[in-house]
Image (cartoon, rainbow, N blue to C red; front, side):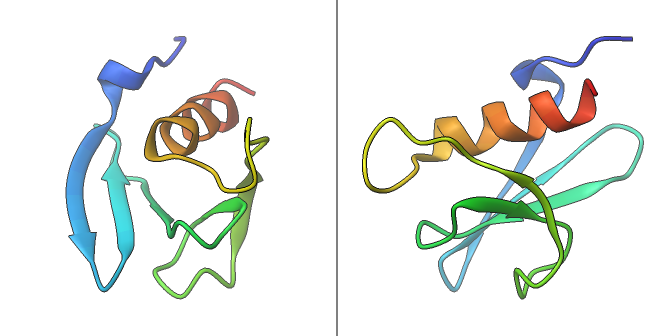
Length: 72
């Protein structure tokens, strides 16, 4: 099964950290200062790296990085 951004469930932002869940129960986190997607809210477990178009990644680029990670 291939994932798309529409398969992610955005859970909102807490203390600057954005959270997405998948239907299978996986959670992914991102903060605008991180160039990676994390598997925990602290950001210490990097799951995938973001390749931003500018100096800082955007929320959309973070979601795309999650999808790319899930489709590996």
